[in-house]
Image 1 (cartoon, rainbow, N blue to C red):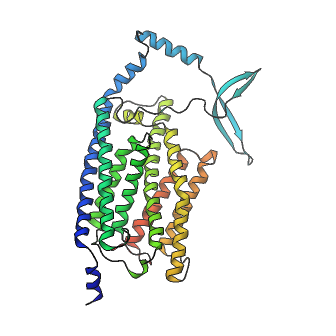
Image 2 (image 1 turned 90 degrees about the vertical axis):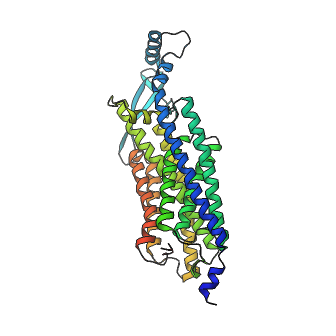
Image 3 (image 1 turned 120 degrees about the vertical axis):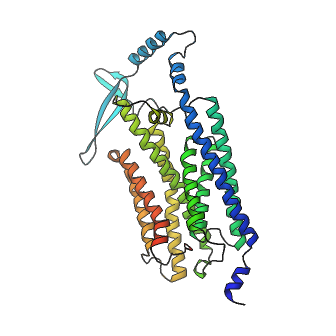
Length: 386
């Protein structure tokens, strides 16, 4: 019997078929979740007028004129803001806005940071009960879809008796699963991340759609170079990093949208309409910026470890730690891009939009490393299975 026939016999075709059914079932549920998230954002916009009226008449028995007068009085007695110019060691200056906490003669005593925390939007549901119900249904569907996808990934691995990320199809299924589980985990830990559901399901559907139509390969045994325990360590690390990088990139895109809206609002250039209503319900730009930074800063050491683990595996398989293979080169470029972002985020003159653009560039490098190099460039890491 030939080696090819032996390899085919080693595959449990029933489990491989079950894996395919579970992946397609997960896609169907993700689609329903996407529709529910879309309906939540749509119906949540209906309550904008009600929210504004409620905010103006928050005190029981107060008339609209009373509420406006109270708001004006509160604004006049609020702590004043001053502009503080800071000069660093190189002579560069940065202007910061600070709140006056006290007076010492003619000297203003200011806070170390903004006294008032950023005000987040009310969320996708916008306070509408029907929209909130749809949002909760969407999260439930996302959780169900993630469980179905988890079952599909496990069945794929068991069908061949190996880790379920031996080619680009399996890697994509596992990477999108990590992103979904990250979202579900954050949500059930009490974090306010439901606003992330709509862009998350869009990305997952696109990724799985690409996987089942373009990247799909039948369940089969690995090539000899991949028969190593390092496959569990190195590739799983890249997979987890990919899911987290995707979540960080989504948060960064939403930060840029919200920041643009806040700047236009402060300058009196904000216009009404659907776009303004959506931005108004998002978390504050500072909140999104902080969340993106925390995700990328938390996962960056794992990406560093993933590259080091790959180098150790390369030495064991090919006798060299590093040969500047296209995948190795772009993995290093991705590492440099994220390192530049983290450094820029800690530098006063590069915070905000400039650092956000670096995140998107770094994520684009990761995508090209994972897909562009694997599909279009031949190298020692060409295990896409296409």
